[in-house]
Amino acid sequence: KEEEQMVRFTQMNQDLLQSGMKAEIFSGILAPVSTALNNLSYTIIVGVGAVLILTGGNMSLGIISNFMIYSKQFSRPIQELANQMSTLLSAVAGAERVFEVLDAEEEVQDEKDAMELTEVKGNVHFSNVSFSYIEGKPVLKNIEIQAKQGQTIALVGPTGAGKTTIMNLLMRFYDTEEGTVFVEGKNIRNLKRSNLREQMGMVLQDTYLFSGTVEENIKYGKQDATQEEVEYAARLANAHDFISRLPQGYQTPLGDGGGNLSQGQRQMISIARVMLNNPKILILDEATSSIDTQTEQKIQEAMNVLMQGRTNFVIAHRLSTIRNADKIAVIQHGELKEMGTHQELLAKKGFYYQMYFSQFQDVSGSI
Ligand SMILES: Nc1ncnc2c1ncn2[C@@H]1O[C@H](COP(=O)(O)OP(=O)(O)O)[C@@H](O)[C@H]1O
Ligand SMILES: [Mg+2]
Image (tube, rainbow, N blue to C red; front, side, top):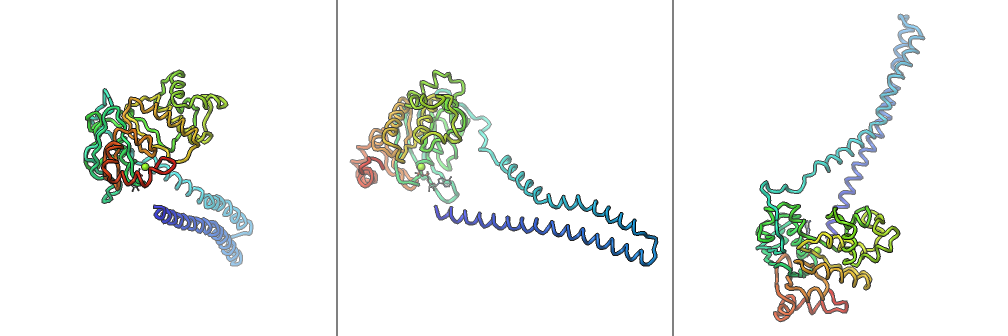
């Protein structure tokens, strides 16, 4: 994968170099050429004038020198235009790219008769789901997972197995190729996207915060929340303490992407955000990176509170999460290898058993 990126990067660099060179050559040539043309016209006027005077034509030195000045005045704007040409062209090229973005296709429209879920309890069913990002390269094959209201489903498996992809299908960032995802017994293709996504909360490893105050970031998704509600959510997320210590508390502006906070703090804010939204279905991507143990513990606590009373899909790395899950779905090469509780899967002595004894049992207690 890294090599592919390298090849693409090199290719793009080559393209950039070539067009850059073309542009430079073109604008480099344009100015001297137009200067040369001017000087040429000058020479012609002088030459023709001289011949006319010498041959005794009806011509005086004054007329010729006037003519020369006129010709200069006439050609100067043209020359300037030529000089501005490259600036103009790059502006046009820029505008083209802007329009490309503006014209980019939006997500597939909702069906005309798209429905809204009324009462969501958190029942999710992946029914025989297959999917590929690129045609002919299947990423998921016949995935069958059922999550009942309030259950925690841990997704485990090697990197690239397809865990994140399963969650992408639930959020309907992509549509299934075969099979159906049901929420509350409804095919999610028949639901309004906005309505579907309102029912879900996501806490990902790398949290994106936008530039705005801490409060605005927590309120994202529930604009009409009161200050009390925001603070309550932040307390549940273990974020209230550190927010209070910020220079302007909840009104502290965050840099783009939340740059002035630590990764752990950003994650706690995103937990507060989801807490406030109070969705029935939760998608968690547990951190693998080593945040300091104290922060890590606070995050874990907050996550545990957040998971109460919801249906949770956890891309799990921590042994504690995996052990306590109602079901563990073991994914490998896009296939559901095994599913069951920790005890059941250990007793089966299959793929999970192997993974458990080769990876889970290291000192840190995570995969
Ligand atoms: N946007 C994408 N376009 C093409 N291929 C992708 C995309 N996202 C993921 N993949 C591929 O799909 C497979 C599964 O990826 P992913 O679901 O992210 O795995 P996991 O979360 O289990 O590590 C990988 O082979 C990955 O390279
Ligand atoms: Mg992933």
